[in-house]
Length: 597
Image (tube, rainbow, N blue to C red; front, side, top):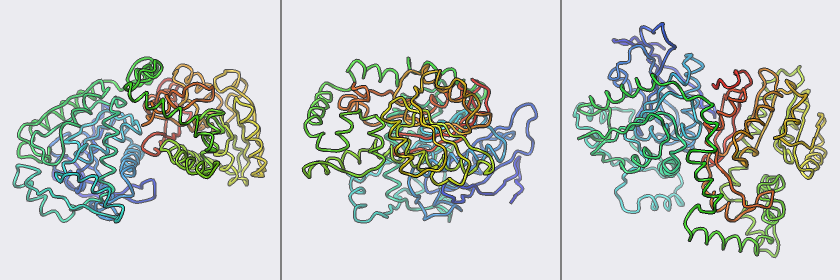
């Protein structure tokens, strides 16, 4: 549907589809005149909590970028999008919706991510920051207005009380205490807000708490973000606290970052009585972003030697991470693990073979607690329910889903060759292939440990697979593993491997071999661990497959994607797991090596 705008844009109303099939409503403003001397550009606006995309129309006019597209969608449970008002399946779904919308803009309107800037307010700003952190989109810049990293609830112990109340009423909703006059000095804007029938007055307590938890994670790991960022903070904000916004800004690795504190300004930064400073700061920032070249993938190659993750990893290597008291506590945990760990089946496997070994992962995948003397099973259940292992199981599901989609999309009459370079027992691959035995599939599984090779052979026999399965003992980091296989495979998988190795040159060399093994247009499915909340505990308590302390350097998603680009593949999609610990991504071999995407 098209509606003629009285000014410089034509308004388009349409919809896009989220990952779960939900159709969400959006508006697009097409410029009357598109510049012929440059690619099309766009601003993607994210509305505040409780609001909807209809309130973005005045912003399009105020920004006045008449040669550029503008877009805004109604978040789930808001405006014309479906769902209970103020609710969503979870906060992660709201972030994934933004990723899907950005993909929709790119494919439907031909606007590349690098020609896109996101403008997000309040809750929308946290959604956008989480998206940039977890998904690492190659956008040109991000404007964050009054980011809701910490909402002022005023009632003492409000958040613990909400967590407790949800034990008895999981679907609890909270009615906003904010009056229109607390959002803006402008009476006209306050009246428009108050009279808008599409404004959602309540928010799900679950979403509110997940927003808080996610905000803490993103602020804590803001150094992983290197997209240019402008932060607009209101000096008289009754809704959100300013201190977390400042901490977030200080930790950013962005080459272009600006912090503007707006005087005599309430929370609705872009709807205030005077928006001159906010708008001009935004326009200056947009100009600076488009004047600067996008960051090249090659710039990430040295991130293992410099940058925030390299520094943290170096501290782990020196046994200096955390306080002395914390390290002593972990030392006590390590002692207790040696005493009580053998009672737990899972811990016993980890102590014997390494907690990062294929045997450990296969046990975690099965997720069936076992142990000795009764108490061992209880200990094992707690072990299997650790956040990292829950993330590993979600990663398996996401990997299998992505692999199944690629198998289903492959022409049924053509042979399909799959390669896994560090398969372990290959449970995720073989269980998926079991569902496609009507296809002409050939599977090649590799692992450097004979134990894993034997387990993969045994599992293929147990599953009674009828497709050819070739299991080989190979080193994923050896060039010999890939020699003579150039252009052979349609799908290559590397899961849970590169997360264990900090050296980017080593990982890139392996990736180059994998991508050479793919036919042109072939697909790479790869995993990453952009962060982990228990790095110190793992390093000071657990051992790896080499019998050494299990020390890891998280590789931010942007860094991992850059290595894939340098190897000659372009990322198409990413799925995020529990608390953003792991990701599963899909790339295609159709990029010029080193060019990125």
